[in-house]
Amino acid sequence: MLRKIDHVGIAVGDLEAAIRLYTQLSGKAASHRSEVPEDGVEVAIFEVGESRVELLGATRPDSAISRFLTRRGPGLHHVAFGVEDVQDALDHYQSLGMRPIDPAPRPGAGGRLVAFLHPEAGDGVLIELCQPEPEGGAANGGSPAAAP
Ligand code: CO
Image (cartoon, rainbow, N blue to C red; front, side, top):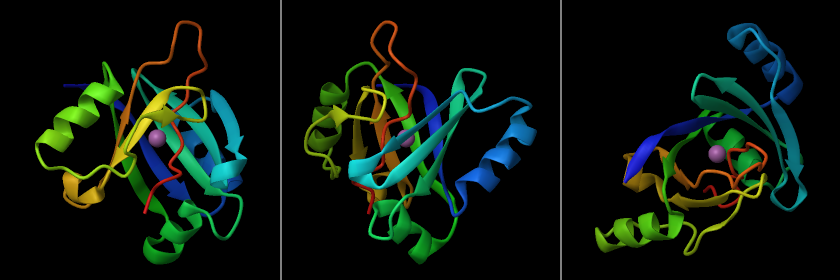
């Protein structure tokens, strides 16, 4: 069901400072930046082999990332697993009694289908399920809008 760790999402207090850090860590520039105004989040992606690091900065104080930062401080926000089909994966995990945050797949920032499971499914870690981008689509980790 889970094909790989697609990316890890990290909540950061200062996106520009975090981009400088991760540019040093990864030895290259961010591959992608975008803002999801409806979610109040700005995203920067660093490619790491087959996986990615997704930095998540808040763009307004009432966004999910702002609330996360207030409650838990900067750090690991979610782990995203690549799945063949987000709807199939949601159905499967719900049949096992796991609670979704998103009742149905929704488009992430880059147009990829994503859905989040409640952190209790991941023993305290928010879990994102994401589907590979369509042919030629922009790489993106999905937006964490529904994060608690
Ligand atoms: Co993500």
